[in-house]
Length: 98
Image (cartoon, rainbow, N blue to C red; front, top):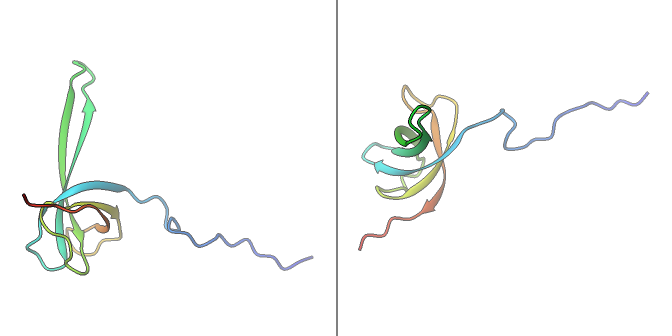
């Protein structure tokens, strides 16, 4: 008999499925926190019209590097505070003021 143990490989998904979303930063006034607004479209069951819904999430920004207008990707995380359950994973597109 060999002493092999079946241990799962360490991956980014070790803690199960975590939602990822892309949205725009709409507020950055809080310390280490940004508010990200995501927009999704779904089709109405009765009329067939596409309905846009928006949701706002507070996300953890450790270095205070994301500003209003930036498009970022957020990922679900353990509760960080009363309202924060997401962290900013990466910058998708930097806001350029014209």
